[in-house]
Length: 251
Ligand SMILES: [Zn+2]
Ligand SMILES: [Zn+2]
Ligand SMILES: [Zn+2]
Image 1 (cartoon, protein in one colour):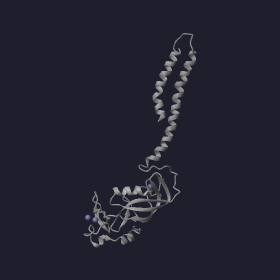
Image 2: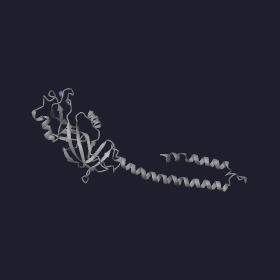
Image 3: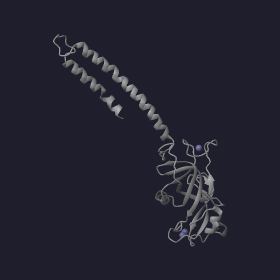
Image 4: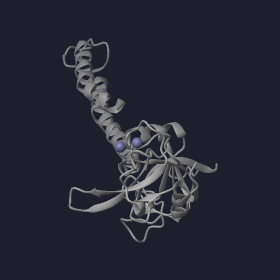
């Protein structure tokens, strides 16, 4: 903030000015002065009144601009929208992570919301929202770069990588998109078993999970033949069966 720095040096400037006025004889009563005393005093008055006024105007201006910036950034913690009106004009294709949960398998975002392979977003905070709403978090998200999603996958090892197309109204942010509706183009099966992480995966198995708050749910993992050996037949799905259950192509 340049203005704040200027305000800090303002008293220094005033003292310097007073010293200058003193040196020029503004406070002496001798008549042989370089500059007339009245002119110096007038200069002082102008400086003392006009400069603070300029600062006030400056602060009002900066305050108004700052409010705008604060409004834009307050509701987008990790997503910096370049502009509310920066609607993407390219096809919104991206990547994201999902879990597969439920006794009947369903795609589930890392935040816990479930969705079908072809779906329009709904807002959990405001039923009146048709996502995406600018100052809300609703809508389907996707990373633009595969690298970004692949990195997220390494730190969320139970999840699966999805390729998605987003449609409808969409916003672009620095890492991807947030949009109205989504079609899952494909689910990439992990190359290794999600349990032992050594052998190649072959089959999906359902595991019973227990949450902190006594909640329970089913989560599906892609496992090798050894790590799926003890699962009952009804807790296993082949790749083809999982494709049918999710209506998503598994590649
Ligand atoms: Zn919303
Ligand atoms: Zn295994
Ligand atoms: Zn195992």
